[in-house]
Length: 207
Image 1 (cartoon, rainbow, N blue to C red):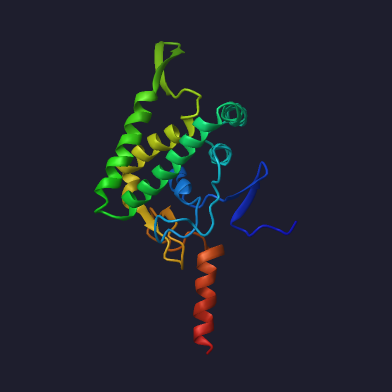
Image 2: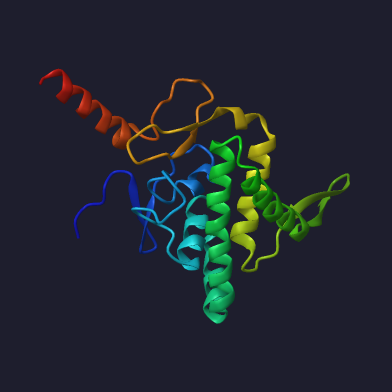
């Protein structure tokens, strides 16, 4: 098997893009190529509920054991898993619109509905401490879990201070998103879009 390009990695038998967004929500949006429109991507790395679950584990939102258990659940409920997978892809497209288009009010409404459902799924669990009880939010380990995780993180991104630092890569047929808190980053990755731009600039200078 030939070596993978530098921006890809083989994870549990699935080829996935390496995280470059500095935020798991943005890396979720970057699981397809070519964000010129909402149509089919030139390359789609999330091709099934199983690949979505593996990706969720890859970026640290699920444990290895949790990934295994969700894949087992999906195998027993393939129709439900497929429905939740399609919902995740719809959420991905709507959230991309929200982060890149200030007029995307219908997409914002769709994103808000998914976030509201995820919020309703949360449970507040007691956490014993030396001084009494603390608490922590928890999500049920069911087929909604990957999308619920991402929706709640998206809510944090949209309402938090990082929102103003979201940038879109200007590379040809790219459009991937990333955080640029220092204002010095232009490309999703110098190894891909940045390098291609350097090659084109060099070719133009030497003509």
